[in-house]
Amino acid sequence: MKFPTIHLMCADQVLPETDIIKFFGLQLDSHLMWKTHINSLLNTLSTVHCNMRILSYTLNSDTLRIIHYSHFHTLIKYGIIFWGTSTT
Image 1: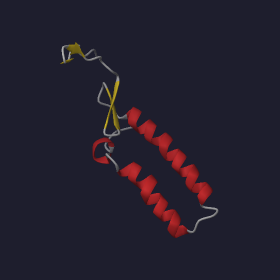
Image 2: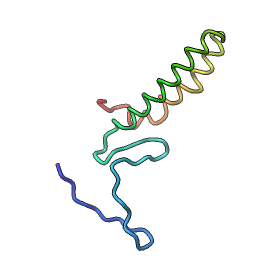
Image 3: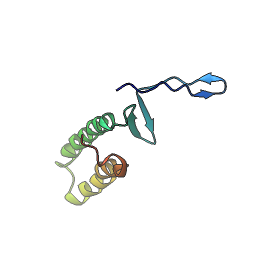
């Protein structure tokens, strides 16, 4: 489906059209889908997971729980009210 072209102006200049916009850390594409955001989030969570796995050999479970809630949990929870219903 082809959407009509909209020309937005700011300070007498036409703003360029983009496929993806990032707003407050949430990425949304031109079709109002969350696939880009979720893929980016998966990459970030994978890095956090690897780091936690390495730290699990040296830190106790209480410290790992703090790290989990400060990094992993906050990334998942941020904006889930918007993208949480995505079929992706």
